[in-house]
Image (cartoon, rainbow, N blue to C red):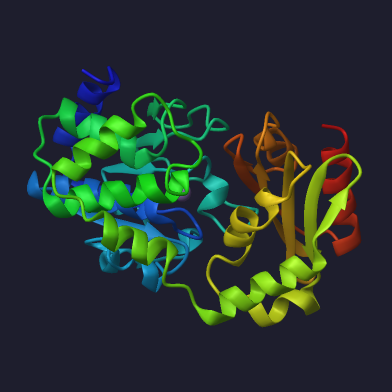
Length: 323
Ligand SMILES: [Mn+2]
């Protein structure tokens, strides 16, 4: 057994018929890969499943089999009472699903499968593994525990989650990450398809957005890099997927002489988002948690709502300077 929780999770699944799954807001290859693979396995077991997500799954993730079945859903309006069991993958808290700040989490039995260090468990069963690249890597272990055969397309989906969450094995690589990736390759995972779609087929407007970020990049004397864009500056790029995440990854975390950094965008008046990246020793998830968000030491983020731009930026700068 890779995980002692695997058997308990399977018991819960066996006694349920209608099983709900979800992807977090701003879905990525790890939440889409893990939920679609798990949903496929459950369907083969004869279960009825549905995957819901507060956002649309973007085009570049449609190569993941079953991504087109993920339903965009306002969680505040969803009728959870029809479902027997809820399995939530790659989601550190309810706040990544409900868009309103005032919400009531559903009461149905919940299984949480996650690797975010800020996730201490809020389900009836919690499978948490912080020493793993991604939930897709965790799910590989779980499927082994259940003796489930992994098809070529499942292997591609799981590898996509691993590639996405490690930035092609640059970070969040743990002791079993390479050996599991190797097993997925041997099962026929299409690495080229995943890498092309995840990293090398980017919209021109996204690349132009990076130009704006580069032109405004600042290095604080305390040793971190940052960019903050006002609503007016960010508005032309708001509709593009992955602006903040890619800029954080490809620009903020590459500035020599800094240990970490962030990009903040004011998405609508007085409502901002911030993404942190660290490249040495600084646990940015602590800053994110202090702002009401979460994530990993190397990559984390938060939403700062109902706060004017200058005040939100000052809040983040104060926390970063205190690191
Ligand atoms: Mn994710």
